[in-house]
Amino acid sequence: MSATRPTTPRNDDVRVETDPELPLLGRLNRRGFRLLMAADVLVIVASIIVPVAIGVAFGLLRLTWPTSYYVVGYLLAVGVHFVSFYFGGLYEREQRLGSRPVLPRIVSMSIGAMLLVALVQQFTVVRTEIRVVPLSVLLFIPVLVSLGLAANRRISRTMRARREGPPRVLLAGVPDDVNLAREHIEDVGGTADIVGSTTKVTDLLGLQQQTGATDVLVVTSRLIDDAYPAPLSTPETLGVNVLRRISAQDTLLGLSGVREVAGLPFVVLGGSALPSSRARFKRTIELLELLVLSPLWVTAGVGIGLYVLATAGRPVLFWQRRVGMDGRPFNMVKFRTMRTDAELAVGPVLAAADDARVVPALEWLRRTRLDELPNLWNVVRGEMSIVGPRPERPELTEQFEGVIPGYDRRHEIPPGLTGLAQVHG
Image 1: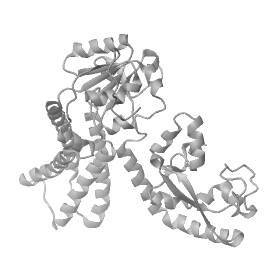
Image 2 (image 1 turned 180 degrees about the vertical axis):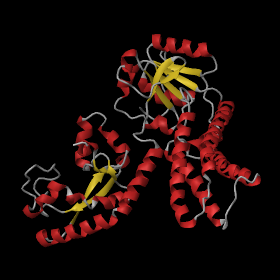
Image 3 (image 1 turned 90 degrees about the vertical axis):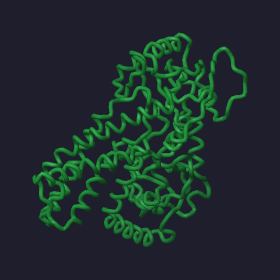
Image 4 (image 1 turned 90 degrees about the horizontal axis):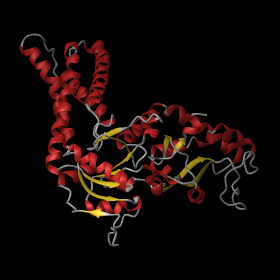
C-alpha cells in the first residue's frame, strides 16, 4: 500500500468525510510517552506505603532501624511491580474498539510481582533480620495495586473519549458486508463514527489519511488477500488499528484473540511480529543470559579460535554481509571454516552438504554449528538475537523475496543465532 496521499477523484466505491487533526497528547502517546506510567507508579507507591503507615499509626506494626533498608526495599518493590507491568504489555497502545477487560491481567501480574518481592525479601531477612514489607501487608498489595491501576485505566479511557471523541471507523468490504457492519455500529450508538467506506483494500492507507480514521474494519475477510504480502506496519506506525472480521468457519481454527465490535467478531491484524514490550523483554533476557554464561562462551571461543589458527591459519574470523532487522545490512562474524578463496569462482551461493570448499579439519565446526559462536558478538551489539529467523546474504535475500510471498516480514525482528526450525528440530 502506498504511503502517499491519493490524488485521483473519488468514485462510487469510496465515501469520505472530514479529516480532524490529532491532539498533542495523542501524538505523544504514539511516541511511547504515557502519563499512565506516572499515575501507576503513584498507585504502586501508595499501595505499599499506606498500609505500612496505617499499621504503624495503630500500633499494629513496628519499624526497625536503620530506615535505609526500608527505602531500598520499597524502591525495589515499586521497581519489580512496574517492570512486571511494563514487560507484561500493560503500556502498549490500547485498542479502543473491541478492548478486553484489563483487570484480570493486572491481578495476575500483581500477584506475580508480589511473590517475587516476597521471595527477594525472604533472602534478605536471613541476613538483616529486617522484614521491610510485613507479610500481612504483602497480602493487601495485589488488591490495592489492581484496583488502583484499573481505576487509572478507567479514568484514562474516559479522558481519551472526551478528548478524541468516538473512534473514527473506516469500513472495507463488499457493499452487503459494509451495510451490515454499518447497521450494527449504528444500533449500539456512540461506539464509533463511520467516516468512510471502500471496496478496495489497496485504497486503505490513502483513504485513512484523507478521513483521519483511527480504526479500519475489514468486514470482508477475503479482501486482505489483495494486500498480502504487504505488511501492516505503516498503519500501525500511524496509530491506526486494523481489525478483520472473521466468519463462523474461522472460529473453528480455535482463534484466541477474537474481539467483539458492535456484536461482530474481529481479530486484530498486527503489523509487527512482536509488541515493543515483548521485544524489549526478549532483548533484556538475552543480555542477562549472555552475561551469566560469558565465562563459558568466552573460554570456548578462545579455545576454538586457537584451534582454527593452528589448523587453517589466518584469518581466524570470517566477516560476511547479512540482512538484519528492517532490511538493514550488518556484518555477521563467525569462525572461518572454508578456504580463503572459496567464492572466487562460484560467487555467493548456499553451501552444500559436502562442500569441497570446507577445510577438512574444520568440518566438525560447521556440523556442530560451533563456527557460529562469534555470532554472540552480534547479539551483544543488538544486530542479532539468540532465537530468530536466520539472516541471509543480500544477494540471496533479493532472490527469495522475488519467489516467496511475505519473505520480507522475516526482517521485522532481529535475526537469530538459531531459528525456531532449529529449536524445534
